[in-house]
Structure formats: C-alpha cells, structure tokens
Length: 116
Image (tube, rainbow, N blue to C red; front, side, top):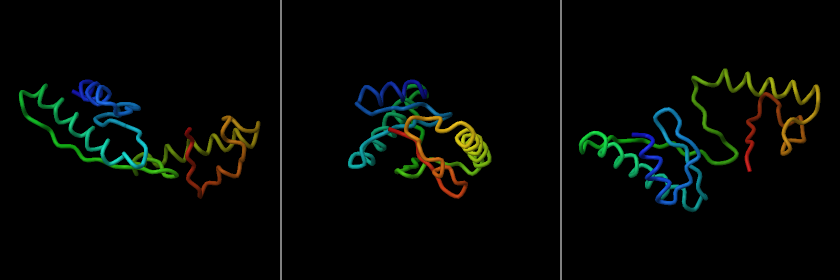
C-alpha cells in the first residue's frame, strides 16, 4: 500500500524523499508545502482504497520547516547519541561533512540541520 502511495505521489510530481514506516517523507518549496502535503494524503487514501477494496484510510501530517527537524520523543536519546558522536569526531579530526565547518554548531543545546 505504501509503495503504491509513493508511486502515485511521484507520478503527480511530488518530491518523495522516502517511505518511513507507515508514512511518506516529502520535500516541497514552502509556498507549495501545504498543497503537496494534501496531494500526498490523497495519494495515500487512493492507494489504501485500491488495496483494501474501496476502504480509504485516513492520515495525519506533520510539517517541519528549516531549521527544525522531525523529532519523535521516543527517538531523542538516539538523536543525542548520534550528534554526540559527531561532535567527538569533529573535535578529534575536524569537520566530517563538507557543509559543516564550525564545530560550535554541535553544542548540545542547539539543534542542527544538515541539508542542501
């Protein structure tokens, strides 16, 4: 069902980044974000109807805008662990990503967005 929803969304010009468990991660320009979210939800409903003999599942949506990042409280400890390890690498051997050249970005009280 999720694969079909991703295919439908992609065919409709939505930039699908990845399926995530029972969700679809998309990206869109801010001026089109709400519209693309609604279109993605329609694709998900259509996919469920095709697979479930006409029954359409509902979906909710969470939008994240830069400089924020999607966060689930259940994953906070993993997020802190990963960024702590990256901070250690940066302090030990310098930047580990071409877009990150300032180790102070990794202060534990700051949220960091890596993207292009």
